[in-house]
Length: 546
Image (cartoon, rainbow, N blue to C red; front, side, top):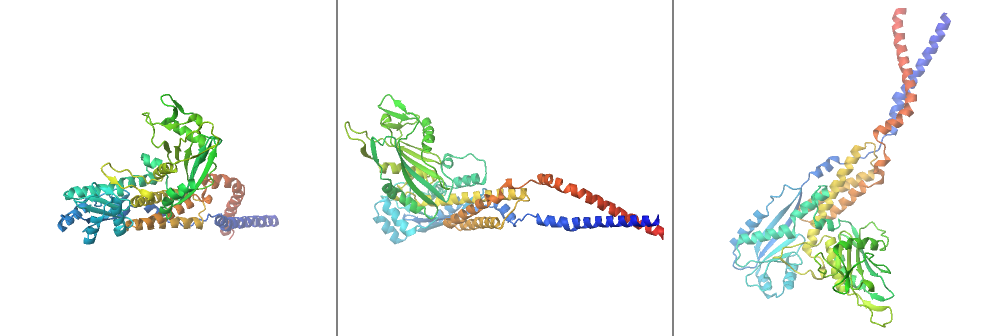
């Protein structure tokens, strides 16, 4: 019937028009709106700059000033010496990631300097004189001493930044070679710097004892001094730790105050000890620990040291007074020889000194008051602390080094430490930024907030500024910038919002969206397909009707 066909055709038209409307809303409005509202916010990061940092070669500059006090050396000799030194110290080591640049100046000493040095009778006075006259950060003074001087008999390194080398009748090549060797192996330590830099950058090279023993850089360290007295009912021990710290450790704290914070605490432990049973000395009345016993003495004792509520690494220094049934107690080497200091060092942990105090006399009232020899104890602890913080530098036997004295750290040692820690911080920062970019590029839907982008920018800027200061020889400023770069890179990398477990991989996204959208999407797509097919059919029918 014509009327029914017209009504059926009208219903189909309404259905297909509705299908087209739903399809239009879903495809043209719904999908873009869903895409925009579920878009992940990712601030732009300097990926190209971070990639370039990996291939950056870091140059550090050192100033060398050679002062001649030997009157037999002419200006021509000094010119030849300057050429030899510049040739020996030339930039021929640019194959590595870091390399030095030496700025060498050779000159005759002023008349006043020559007369002043003649009147100085001790090495300490000579060192203090040149410290006041010539010393500056990252500038090393090589003093060529006259043949008739009575103070310096062999090549000597002072406590500041001066090296005293008896020139006498030695030829120029010998002097040049010796100066070069001192710079390479002691004052600058190029090979150690390169190895350390590569290790912190991620190279899998075998570490030496010094690197395994010392702590990596941190903005602060907690130092805990502990007196362990297993029998306080017998011995009342006075160790005057406050005065000892003030006398022996305060100079070091002051020297490092611009670079790290040292928080010093002390405590006393009673009725506890080294639970490892010592060996009985059959030849002599006493007890001893062998080297293999020492690691087993730390763990039981560490459990009683108390909780460490700090983000800083903890260094423990323990004075252990043996109980009377284990007295005297000694530490012996593999060859059976007793350790002179009766102490041992645990890498990256601290040290223990065994102090054998005298037993109470018979019929004395208990507890007996006894005193710890804090001078001996603190000297051992300071040596251990220098080793743990990487200030100890080995020199050859034919090279004399002035006793460190009250300053604890020599100025050239501090320069070396700043240079090394600066490069380690830069390597760690670069490695951290590389890991961060690999994470962010690997997970495309991870959110990168503005503060993370700012931290990354700060880290990249800090690395570039440190590089610039190193090139100009300003190691203190370079260290400060490297410290900022390290803090910023680690803050960005360990931000809680970047936790990988918070985000779904792409394949799991499809597993979530398909059950949600497929039951809705298939009918809509089917209706759209039928609507489009109906429109095409209608268009073909119009010409036939006409």
